[in-house]
Image (spheres, rainbow, N blue to C red):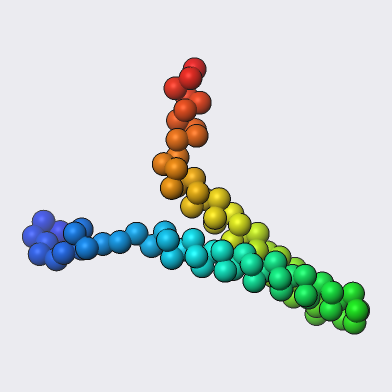
Length: 89
């Protein structure tokens, strides 16, 4: 019932967080790849198991960031790829 009588300015001043999300994903991708490489080199040089785990975690962070960037790219294009194929048939 309270939704009907809104007096706030949210719809007028609201901004999409997608630009900030894209920047954070780019930073996570870069740092994830760099950290995975550094930790992999440390794992090879020292032979310690902990560096393998650290490298794996950093690689997973980089993969998640890359997937998020792909999702953001799809959303910014309006998701037209799947709709185009349906219209062609």
